[in-house]
Image (tube, rainbow, N blue to C red; front, side, top):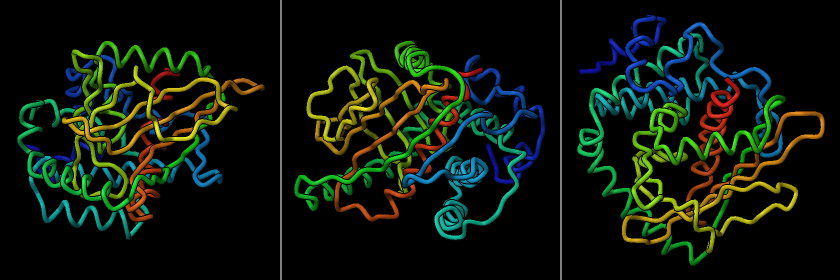
Length: 295
């Protein structure tokens, strides 16, 4: 069983954690060299139109790694403490251990297994579904948007989207889940939809939703004509009840590299902190996905 002590020991730089995680999948982020930078060089992240230090994105991921570790070992007191630290304290933390911490978390997910994760999170998923339906009812058809931009000085928008779609079509689950500690299950279903079980934004409960990237009708996120390449879809519960949507847009940069504009729609009744925290979630996952593509 994963314990907080063993997780921290693994995260402190034990190369065995990374080697063990290699069994998870050959292309996952967790198999990266433990001495490599925690984020790819040449990335710039913009939140609310202002560039943020990439180290702050790594710090956010480090805090969420501790929260995910507590959730997987059913340490609910530790989970609450970690959430409060992550959302409120904004403590300075070292970031050298992030690659090994990712590996330890990947190994824990593999050990627990998909069925075990569903059982572990069942109560949270039920509660968050009820909350989502209430939030939609309170919003009266209105939406608000969490927006983050990530710019890479290497690669191309087209190349990244081809890599991204290939991971979806082939159901490369390690690529999807390793990108953010708040990802628990991301799987491509037989009908082409993607099932996502994650903790979104500033939520303290995991939620489940489904996105069909092949059906863009009804996407409530505004389109930006300055970004010609788009990945979009409506997010719904298992019964088709719509709870949000995504529109991620991309363009090539004139001097080389590419820019991504990442937008997620949430019910208008959700607190502002929830929306702000999801900006960091987007920065983390897409920064890691872009870094993986560039490798």
